[in-house]
Amino acid sequence: MSKIRNTHHKKLNLFKYLELNEINSKEAKAVFAYRSRMANFGHNYKGNNPYRICPLCYSHPDKQEWSFRCSVIKENINIQGNYDDLIEGNISKNLAKTILAITKLRESLK
Image 1 (cartoon, helix red, strand yellow):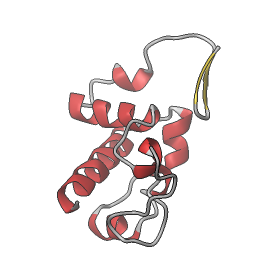
Image 2: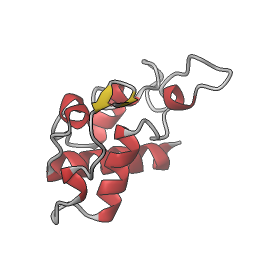
Image 3: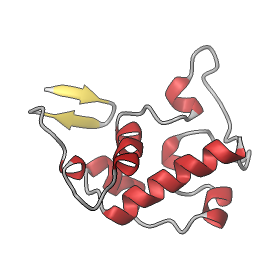
């Protein structure tokens, strides 16, 4: 069994969201980055600085699970879906669009 932080796999196989025709390659890439904890958040890349603050609102830790609650993100994006669905693998087109929009917003405002 392989384990990637909070995600457990008994068997390695292609996730369903990667096979969905309605999710484009940019959305799938963004979802994969979140699911594998490779999205550009300070908590994912701590290095010598174990605590980083959100560069958008400066009011919470820079963790990807907080992105669905961040006030700046919520002001700019219509959040569809929730973080738990992402972790559980319940990926919809709307959730994939939300994750891509969060990724783009964070890149544009930094």
